[in-house]
Image 1: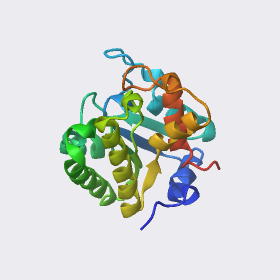
Image 2: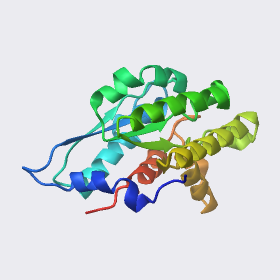
Image 3: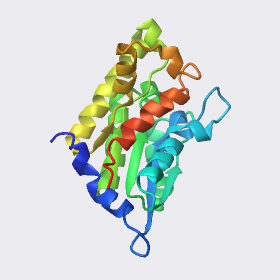
Image 4: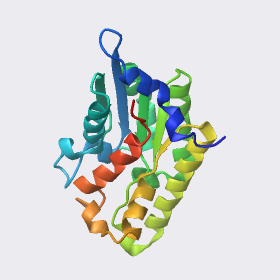
Length: 219
């Protein structure tokens, strides 16, 4: 198995989003995870309208102006994937989404790779069993990058594991980690992408949002 082609994986969903009244219907997209999709900036401040779920919603509405669409945030600040998996049925699948994004990499360092992998697999399989498309998000960066310590190495390892899971299940990958890496390789400053020691700035959220919307080919 491998990560699917961007032009193909969400093509059926894009066909639905392009439909006009009276043939269209309400489309739900759920963003599940921790404080980053929740919109936390400098905790406890929550900057909803600069967080990537809102930015994705705006971009997709511009791309598909006839769509009736909800982008629903089920993320909880401070949560890791085991906790997210425990409420996946009640809080996420209950919305009957067409697409679910999963973003727990930053906090999963606290539970380790093995426990995180089990929780991610449970969520992925629960969604796929209901024919719901899934996009796995690698973690955005934090200030452990400057230390290059064990916490940073753990973040790299979780990013690699998430990529492997996306390939294993042949689902979409929003590679936030790689987007940050490209930004620095092009001469950018990581501080421009951070609003807190581990929360993205508006520019960081824009990078993440572009990773997601790149999977939605225009119609």
